Picture 1 (tube, rainbow, N blue to C red):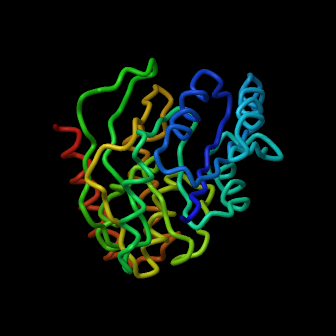
Picture 2: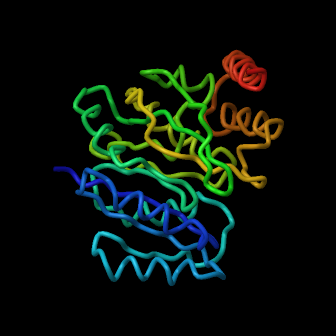
Picture 3: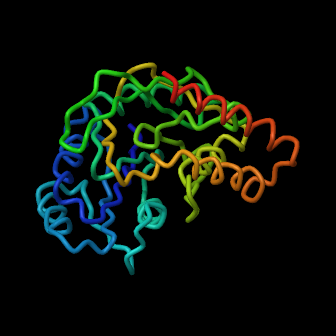
Length: 249
């Protein structure tokens, strides 16, 4: 079996951390390591993480040197420490379903697959799961991903044997850029076609700012990926149309 390194950034997440960690412990695929990366929390997050570390040697607690308030830095601390072939992500307020890893790993048997992802559902701040499923295509290439991010980061996992360790940059939409960089190496991402996670919505969620997200996406096209103005406009139009379609549903 190949080890999956699970990266879990945490800043003042004591209210939800146990549920997130428990969802990793409940995985039917057991060859994993979990890095809880505490971003200088002022609540009981670190103490809760230490409890789990004492009970299961697969769980490790890491710390950022200073509070960042952004997910990229703690995720990168975890990626740097990871020893597994596969890198997966789960924030401390989200949850996986038990078969998540078991369902995704077989997708990597295809030579062109460097990333796996799944459908997911949203839940409110109290943990009530909404019935609607956030769906996405079965297979996604680099060019297709440029038209809009369909990889929910909490469901995503990539193969370091094929693309090496890909870190997240401290920008907005850091996960979108990372998945683009993974696929930019000539691979595709494959979808299990099943619901494998619950994403917790909150009033402060970064993904909730639609207008700002448009400018962040443009920056990724032009500054981070160096796309031409024409290519950027074409992909941006598709991205905006897809975003409008989601809001009208």
